[in-house]
Image (cartoon, rainbow, N blue to C red; front, side):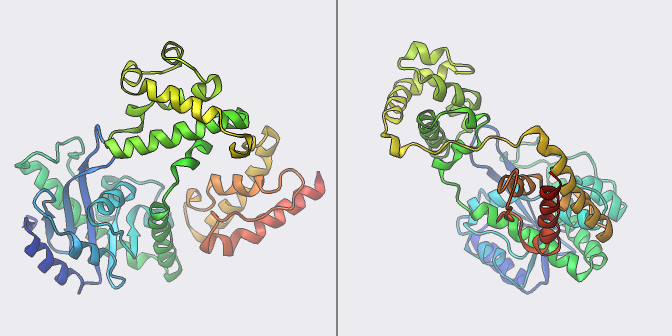
Length: 377
């Protein structure tokens, strides 16, 4: 059956359609974008599905995104997306807004025990019995005109995404539906939490092995790299390769020839930013001791693996009871943060990252398990 496609190519048309969409219980939202040599995604197409038709918004022709931003924030309209982390970046970049309430069909599939991280085509086939043609994911979505295949692919995505919501929503209990929306709100909150560039050094592999003075250099390197990637709109590794960060902080080269010998150091970086980097290293290395970061905690020892396994089992058992894929229950990072809060002898504290229904249903069981483990050691 042919899909009814409506193009939106000007601000007035977008505003009129957004007024109509605000009257609906839900809309499906998808994006096509390019992100080859840039830090930020470049929007090539925005698709909206209302359950019957596909609306294709050409972002190259729209200048006023306020109506779409208002739709995204309209609490009375559920926004349906699939595996949406990059879509959220696109929407935030265009409109300055993020969707709420947000229903992610990939999460919903997990809550219905259909599978974890299901790709869109597979989920459409599983739930709707429709086999989609091979995707246009490698297409140039910034080219104009778009090919017929691209247009058809984009329109099908919007229509079937709406159909997925209509099929999945009745299968979810009210509790599970609320949890899908809760997880969607957490995805949005994560994107809203502006990560301070000065805190990124904590995520560098083996950073815990560095002394405080070396960490001061690493902190400044990571912060500079992040800001420059954003300002120049290029990938972080185009500014400075990730594998170069730790050895620079460790050895603190004082001239260009020493910098050039660092692992994974690109000659382009030496040419463009070498002199600046030498000065940055010197400045950071000479900071007074009271401005150095504290030593980072070591990773959990191998002996902790057995305790982590016991904690994961609590989530798996609850997942089996609720009919939810185990991967959605207790995240590894949350369990590690819990264990680090008091290892090896306690007392333990539930981390902030364990929120909402997971904290309510499993938080006390986790603490009880750790208390019991402490008594047997």
